Image 1 (cartoon, rainbow, N blue to C red):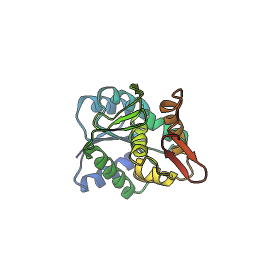
Image 2 (image 1 turned 60 degrees about the vertical axis):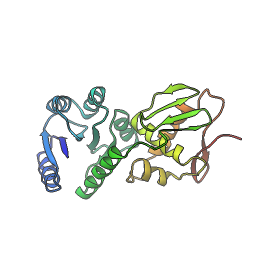
Image 3 (image 1 turned 120 degrees about the vertical axis):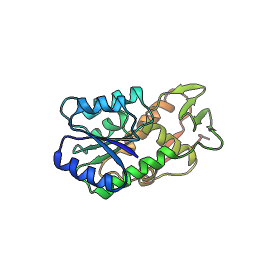
Length: 226
């Protein structure tokens, strides 16, 4: 597995390179954002790990530029900024996951394994599924409502896919965190509620029929209204 690490803290670089190499991963390092962005767009990597606060070009900008030319590479953000707003900003820029400093290396490894599993999961046998006038295509990872394309970020798509696969079931916030992001975020954040609201605006507003419903005290459910 080829990894690009974009990080400017020498001590952290040393620890991560040693740990990733021992896990049989091939690691390339960029110590500033400008070099990191150039390497990310010119070379093929399986995973990019990048800090947000970097000299030159910051991690958010790098992520956005990489996504313009490469939608398949996994991107893991690594930063000291751990509020819900910062998590959402990172994910909306195109990141697949987010680890807050300080962290244990075992957590980082678990996140990497999770991204590898997600990246290698084959398409559904049925290719697509319909609920009311909502269509989700598992192969192209796209959604339509009443035959109109819905523009979704990678995180929004994963959340919608989880809802669709569990239609008519009440899903708790913890279940959603564990299955959409694979590993718990800080439970003090409201990232699930933020993304559910994003989805509602994109798939429910102006349709006349809501599909995502709040079950107070329990979580959320995707179902057709009676």
